[in-house]
Amino acid sequence: MKDGQRIIGLHLGLLLLLFALQFVLPAYHHGNLARIMVLASYAIGYNILFGYTGLLSLGHALFFAAGMYGLSLTIEHAGFTAAPALLAGVVTGIAVSAGLAFLALRTTGVAFMIVTLMFAQAGYLTILYFSDYTGGDEGFVIQAAQRMLWGVDLSDPTNRYVAALILFAICLLASLALVRAPFGRTLVAIRENEDRVTMLGYNTFAHKLAAMVISGTISAAAGATYGLLFGYAGASFASVQYSIFPLLWVLLGGAGTVLGPFIGTLFMFYLIDLSSGLTTAYMLVAGVTLVLLTLYAPQGLIGELRHRVWRWLP
Amino acid sequence: MTLLSTRGLSKHFDGLQAVSKVDFDLPEGEVRALIGPNGAGKTTLVGMICGRLAPSSGTVSFKGQDITHLPAHKRVCLGIAYTFQITSVFPRLTTRENVALAARRHLPKAEVDNAVETALERVGLQDRMGEDAGNLSYGHQRLLETAMGFVQKPDILILDEPTQGLADSEIDGFKTLIKELRQTTTILLIEHNMSVVMELADRVTVLNFGECLAEGTPQDIRENPKVQAAYLGTG
Image (tube, rainbow over all chains, first blue to last red):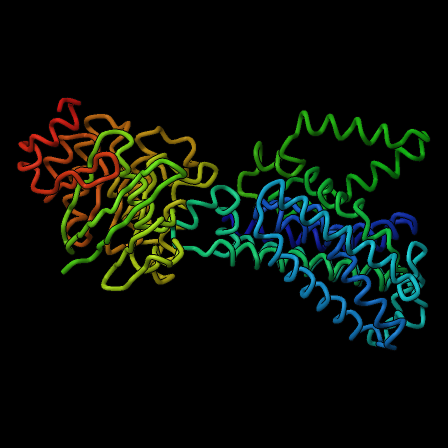
């Protein structure tokens, strides 16, 4: 079997498995998996910038929150229905990521991390400042009646699962197509040696700008969907914690692998879920596991799998 | 026809005058060697020609167009290919992908695969296509770097010390390659290996302390007392 067929088979297989799981999973895990798929979509967005382009952002919560508030504020204050509100969330994500990209891409390395972090903090504080509209720290609930998308009630667990799967499938397949296309391969080359890419005739600034907008837009789509599916928008989603999460998920799953973000999110979610059932010191368990993984699987779970077994993994 | 020329091109780094008022003309079809002792400003000069460094003063023109303020990637697209002095391949990408990255920017999609394979055959790396470039020997990485230059089908190919670290047999192969490439491409060669310079170059430009010391055929340069003094440190 050719590599291309294997790759497509593997990814479609995962999507089919996720579709089938909804019929057998108990309600608790069914709900978890819906949440994991949305968060994994966020991680997929993050991975395009960090894993493939080599730009470490500490401000992706800004994009997630841009999507979430683009959706929830237009529902709450402008009376939008779900579909145009979802679109508003995505458009907000495009605008915010393009704006930040223009400013932050003038820097590299540590300066880039700090600039993205600072802008995200500014966004977080803005949400708190306008708490009359945003609900500030407490956030606000999006009512079930406002979460009807084309006649489908997204507060229903089954519909929610399918909607999360659709988002995840779009993000996963888009990321797969992107990294296999010449554009994606140029991004990888920029990650490896930007100076050389310039001297091959590529405009690396334009490539990084596009990568950041794609990454921010996917993150915003995940944020908007999260708000719509789980009926809540709050400032905590714009906090620095939500910028660190996708970094952790991607590192654990394997930066620069298509499946890594999902595996990392799944692993981390259940690591905390299971260890908190055993002990109140669950963060200690999580911490030790992370240290062990960093020591023995520095390329992340899928990264190691690619390194050791399946060289053809994208 | 003059393909590339510089007028009064200078570069200083704080107090250090690395290149000083260099007027340089390179006619189409020529193989020109640029030589000079270490620190003479050769890499700085070509850095300004291909846009990696902004000149402190002076102009660069290519095919009659002033390109002094054009960013590097646009100059590359106009037909200036540059290969790095310090090997600068993509170590974690395959040999094939290294060359394909160079080819994709300059050739129609349908021609890329063919061009990549031909380029790798010409430098003798056709059996290493699937290997990560980082696993190649240093000499092979130099050859890969050269392949990434000429696969772009540039009007001018700038090679910065391409034979550094190559074995004698590999240098012979390199000379043959340049003799083939010169049919279609103007070549500017920074080179320390005098046998390569003497055998390949039509003309030689000598830089010393950032200034153009002499220019002429390899024979003229060999016999020039100023050049001998600069290299031997007498005078």
